[in-house]
Image 1 (cartoon, rainbow, N blue to C red):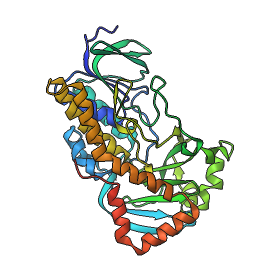
Image 2: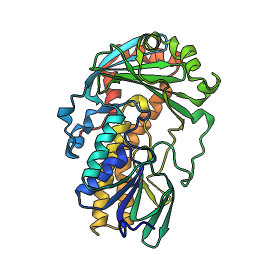
Image 3: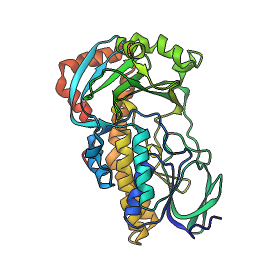
Image 4: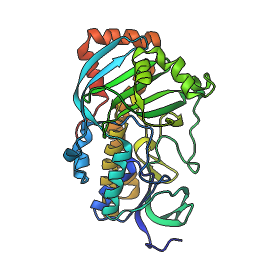
Amino acid sequence: MNNQSSKYDCAIIGGGLAGLTLSIQLAQNGHQVILFEKNKYPFHKVCGEYISLESWDFLNSLGLPMAELSLPIINTIHVSAPNGFIIHSPLDLGGFGISRFYLDNLLFKKAKELGVTVLDNTKVLDVKQHGELYVVSTNDDSYQSKLVCGSFGKINPPFIAQQKVTEKGKYIGVKYHIKTDLPAHIIELHNFKDGYCGISKVDNDTNCLCYLTTSKNLRLHQNDIKRLEENVLYENPYLKKYFTESTFLYEKPLVISQISFEKKHTYQHGIIMLGDSAGAIAPLCGNGMSIAMRSSKILAKQIDSFLKNNISKIELIQNYTDEWNQNFSSRIKIAYYLQHLFGKKTTTYWSLKLLNYSPKLFKRIISLTHGKKF
């Protein structure tokens, strides 16, 4: 058993946006926090890297100097059908671009600065409850904590029961960083058969190109990413142009598989879930990162009340679950339906034709996938 501390107030498994921002808020409130991340900071993640401006003030409150980072502010969206038909719309709230390599590392440094014990390159193997404490076992040691929170992303670790997902519900995500001539204020969403690809500017004069498609689509192309891109994505003329005329900065793309968007739980295996672990929004809506951070703010408030003996653990879980559903269930549901609308040749084309004649409806749909500033 680790002797660095007799016990922690909260142990957080997963050091992405949800886990890091939760750890910072708890540390700001004077609580002892330990965070486990299986990768070594800094590292890249498969992610669209567009964040709604609803999160800007929140990141400032954590101590990040957002105005000094010179990030691209995005206020326009272009959406194309697989055949190249395209529509444009302003983004009323808008967003900003920042790579996960850069943002996560900023948050990692802030967490350490505030006294969070961050153990990166550390894999959690199991979590067990012993009386009023939990024991978190890793590949190196074991640690005690009053609470355990899970922010391990879209895929549960082995010690959490895996949801059964049909082949139809399985997706892969693929990400590149590229150099191209897309204006900094525009985000583009280009549809192709059984998928869609987002492109927008991030930091360091770089663009993020990230797409989602079904696992079946990849399997039909012998699990060959390049073959899939040439045979399917290239059918959209905008994507063919980006793939053939841009400078790609990775030798190979980052890939994540076994993604699903099935309903998840806010509490499982004695662990309080947040971010994608509690419920993932379809990437085409571009707000998974904002939801991750907003969920951390909701949870941090409840944990703070529990640790100050103002509420019980049962009340903590119930209050958090109620607030999660109130803030996110509709957004995730709308995104789920939109996901099934796009990525289909005929349906996507006629949907975009309709939205082209109904710009107010288009803006309304966009607004339903965004939240208010927090």
